[in-house]
Structure formats: structure tokens, C-alpha cells
Image (cartoon, rainbow, N blue to C red):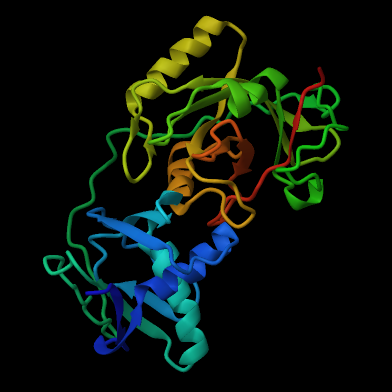
Length: 345
């Protein structure tokens, strides 16, 4: 039995057809990997982790098996592993399905879908209750005075600096990083050369699970471009008490306690300027951080200048690595690539 995606049209969720799952996956990953995947085998492990997030755009798409909202993807051809990474179902199934349906049946603005295949017999297909016009929800309860009040204390403004002040070698081209400051106005990164060399060459990373840690350094306001932050990374410190599952790399509360202790012992007045982790497949221009990575960053590293470092490692050429940095933008759902330079010498 081959895997398919069943389609349910309108708010009544009447089943109207099916689409081969492999067709949707090929449309995504042929673009990601930059090659045809004819003859490749997709190995999918759907994880019992709920995802009820809405996919933006039209038509609206509802995953009727949202209890299994994430999937570990492996792509194998002729015994060679081409790709391995977790993704949200909405990212690699709902999104190409949305494009297909918008092209084929543009008049229909609401769809439900559910993956059907081996192993899914025991996964419930849940049709959400239709919206009722004129409905009003009333919460009954008495108001009580607040026992205490929380108010955010804002950090003082960082000092002002230029790329030259931070020792950036502006003549040294980093091919993986955009150099147009207008393209990424929020944050730019300067990495100590020793830190960049360690991440790209010397640090021993696992070839089986994603690994990562914290980025330490200093934050400045860009003297040449008001409104932009400059982040200088002076250390990449492996995370302690972390986890790595099929779904993502995990920081724990103990991880943050340990890194704060390490920064205090270093005595260099460094701040936690972000995090880094590995992807165990080659870097491409089409894919950077996954939706899982973006969710981890935006819920954990919430300062506007904190960045996410990504080290892509080729399984067959583990010494051939690509280092990139990303930052979050206010109100954005994706994290754009961040310009970075390494220091002189």
C-alpha cells in the first residue's frame, strides 16, 4: 500500500480525492537538494507530536491527523543517504498541497487533508467542528485583585561600534553569507577567526544526531547603520545537559544554568548572543533553518540581536562544512540569512 494524502473539501470535510505523497515530497526536496529524485526512496517516521499551527496563505489547509504533526525524513538512493532531517507536516506536505490546489481548484478556499498509508490505521482522523455564525463565547468567573505585578526591565542600550572596530576582515569573502547590508538590516555578525575555524574544521560533531551549543560574545549598535545591531561572537561553547531527539536539538533549564556559570568563570563580560547546531546534510541555498529550528529560536532566544548558527555537515565528507547565521525579524515567520565576517588574522 503506497502512502497518499486524502483530500476533504469545504467545512463539511467531504472526501473528494487523493494525491500521491511521493509527488508532494519530490516537489519539495528536489528543490532543496537541487537534483532529480527519481529512483530515490523516502523513509518517513511520523512522530506523535501535535501541531495545530495554521499554514498561512490561501486556500486554508487543516491537517486532520494533527496528532502526528512532525515527520523524520530520510532520503536514500542506491544505498546512499542523501538527506535526513525532521520537518513539520505543514512544511513539507501542506505547503506543496496548498500550491497544487490553488492552481487546480482556485475557487475552493478551504481544505482538510490527512496522510493515509501503512501504520496510520490507528491514528484518528479528526474533523474539527464547523464555525457557527453569530457565536459568542462567554467566560464566567469573578475578577480577583492581582497578587503581584510583573514588569519587564529593559537592558541599557549597547555601546556603539563599527565593523572595523570589531576587527572584521571586510576583504575576506564568506561565500555562504550575504554581504548586502540592506538585505538584512537588523543584525550583522563578526566571528573571531578561531571560533569560525573550530566550527568549520576542528570541532568533532556526531554523524548520527544533531549537536549544538551556545554562542557567547558582545552586542553593539552599528555606528554606520542606525537601527542595526552588530554581534561579535567570541566563543562557541558546547551545550551541557542537552538532548537530541528525532525531532530536534533540545536545550534544558540545566543547560542554561551551566552556560551562565561558564560565562561567569570566563570573566570576559560576555553575553549569551545565540546558539548553534548541526544539520547532517549538505547546505543548499533553498533550505536553512527548518520550521522546528525557527520555533526553538523564537521561543527560547528572544532578544532581537540573538542569532542562530547553523553548521551543515556532509555525511560522506564530514570535514566539508558550511557555516551560516540567521536572525529573527519582528513579526516574521522565517529567519533570514545574516551577513557575517570573520576577524583579521
